[in-house]
Amino acid sequence: MLVLTRKRDEVIQIGDNIVIKILKTGKGAIKIGIDAPGDIRVIRGELLETEKQTEAVESPDSAQRKQGLSAQCA
Image (cartoon, rainbow, N blue to C red):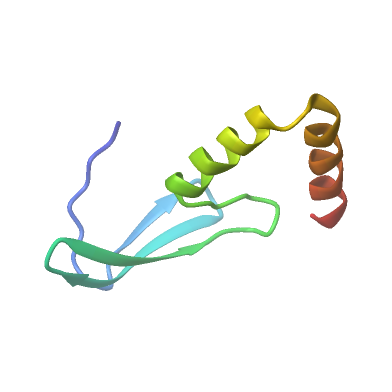
C-alpha cells in the first residue's frame, strides 16, 4: 500500500485517466473528488460491504439477474 500526505488542492494521479483531488481537510475527515472514466466503478467501502452481504443472502438467480441489469445500465 502506498501512503501519501496531501494538502488541500493537491492531486494524486492513478494511471492515465484517474485523478484524486483533496478538496477540503478538517478535524478527523477529508473531502476528496475523484475524476475517473464512466466505465470505472467508484464506490465507498461501506457500500461495497453492504452490497456483498446482500448478494450473499439473495438466491443465486436473483444475484445473476442483478448483475445482468447492472451490466446493461453501464
